[in-house]
Length: 201
Image 1 (cartoon, one colour):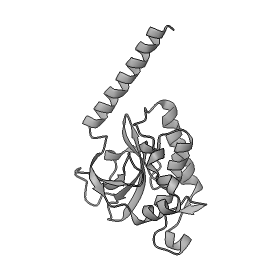
Image 2 (image 1 turned 45 degrees about the vertical axis):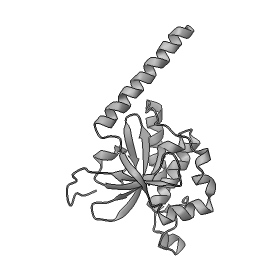
Image 3 (image 1 turned 90 degrees about the horizontal axis):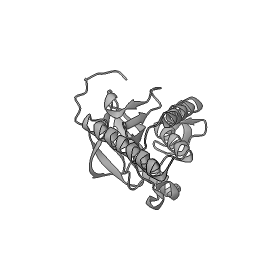
Image 4 (image 1 turned 180 degrees about the vertical axis):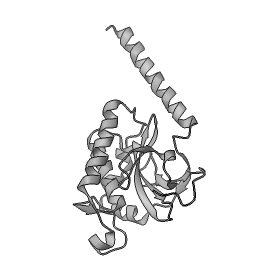
């Protein structure tokens, strides 16, 4: 293939990706954030213990083009971590109310998220596209999921649900998430969807 033909192919691929991202934005599949907010105390302490995990100088940004291979990686990591880790509270495991860590056999929702994020980064996913996200369940309880920024929308990896869904197709109320520019900073999420009261997750 000639250089010109390769250049045309690359340009068409980029245009297709941009069109998909624009379409995802228009149909609400991409979250809107509305400025800085407080960092969860568990994440603050996690960053103090493991500063490299929250160093913005190593942050790589960008929406991921969701190829078939990338989709299979998401499914595999989500399934593997959900299967490998048994649920347990921080009080049961560590004797404290809030302690974020990479799980060793047992963990709570944040620990599932941290492990999924680490495994995807090891596979070459950009850290800035893998964001810890705080949500509220329909019963009012807080919960954490991993939001993955893709050209098809913001996808949610969850230890309570086996399937991977676009964020606006879930019944959670989205509160805040890591900044895609700085993993130690957090931003509020504008979630103005009308959710059914009492919906079951």
